[in-house]
Amino acid sequence: MTLFRPILLISAAAAVLAFAADNAPKPGKMEPAPKAGKNGWVSMFDGKTLEGWKPTERPDNWKVEDGAIVGRGERSHLFWMKEQCDDCEFYAQVKLNKGGNSGMYFRAEFMEGWPKGYEAQVNNSHKDPVKTGSLYNMVKVFEQLVPDDTWWSQRIVAKGNVITIYVNGKPAVDKFVDEKKSFMKGYLALQQHDPGSMVMYKNLMYRKLQ
Image: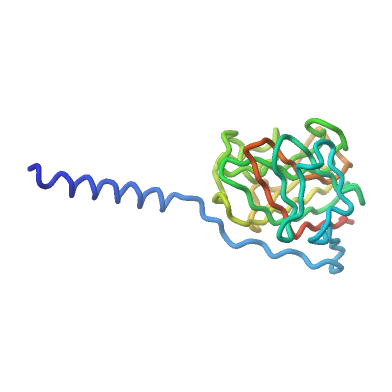
């Protein structure tokens, strides 16, 4: 009987690994970035500088590396100051490290600390159970939709008090109606959450909705 135990243990371990692989988050196909100048889309990032962006605190936490805006270190929020969002779409391609946490703010107030405004969550494996695709404090997604260290797209549509958040082109929050009309106009911003997080953003796009 002893001779068969290693085989049984190996088979059990293989089954566990196969189960984990089958149940790992599937990234899906990233939604292509809109083209600047087409259908009202505006590029928010030139791929080289932070021109047009302003941090509320700790400016050294934001850099441009390899054509992406990179956030590291303690809490900081980087605001796009060229235009405010009332009815708008906000698109970005995002990559986040294991255990990292970030967010895409819209209709937000430029302020230190945690901004007043809506936040589309960016969190794949951080201890916070509210994951990527959530409308923070309003609609919670607990399933991990995106693997760590993987590029994905997130697009926000805010029209009046109706909000939709797409992850890789699929709605994670689908036409949520905020009866309180909590935030109706404000800036777009990126979040650097904590010293353990490193987030990258590229192909940031915005358009005003009619």
